Image 1: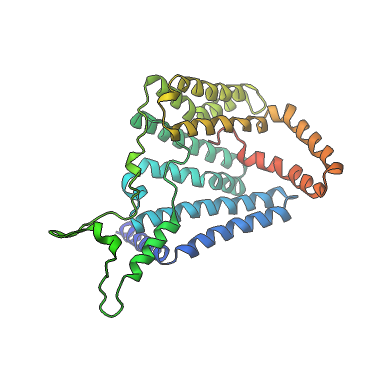
Image 2: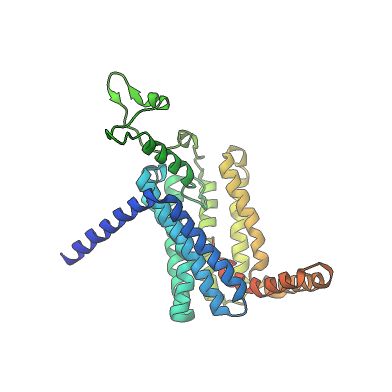
Length: 333
């Protein structure tokens, strides 16, 4: 009974929040932007302190999570395609992507390295398992941005237009000429779902064959393979790094023969993955052996030759190691 009452209370709070977001869409966006700017400004002042930088990254990742929550509130308030056409597993994966950095940093700040590795392992087991299920079930290429991009401005404008057509004295809605297509002379007004993109159904994904599905599974399971090998061979070993490179190259190779059959969106996703492989330069042990020395050499040479570069190079030299610790992990996909 107590649990049931608590759940009802949570549902009431969520309904109130939906109403607030629908009525104040710009304010919700401004709050997200303000939180990001606070983290940017704080990073500039606190770059000498590791824990302080972690707190700024925690604030930044909290803004990402807030954006995800607000987008889902928009989805439900305005009944978008994300709310109607996307499955629960897609929303769960999108949530983990938004909350991953925040959970990792938060667990480290609260419980140290042990708590951090427990959080990382749990998150990656869930993500890799759900992604593998998604690929096998859907038989299509897994996109990093699994939910459609939210165009809040479009939804807000249409909502305002509907409000402007409401007659203040009678409370009736005055239809415009543009609304004629939604009216049937025999049956009255047609019921439709708000804001579903008419071109959304045209975005048909390619059905993958067995070779391509194996390629996708190689890609989505790479973080788990890397973490497992990290536990076996150690952090300083080259084996986890090499296994991750092999997984990414093998995934691309298994798709190569069928590139002509893919849609433009799917080709763009594979191209994004190839670009992302540049981050291997920032990942240990290659970074410790080669990239770090190269970057320090370039930044040191730029100091006396490039105007106003002293502060910029100082900031980069202080921030890049911090960036690596948070974003350049081989399990971050």
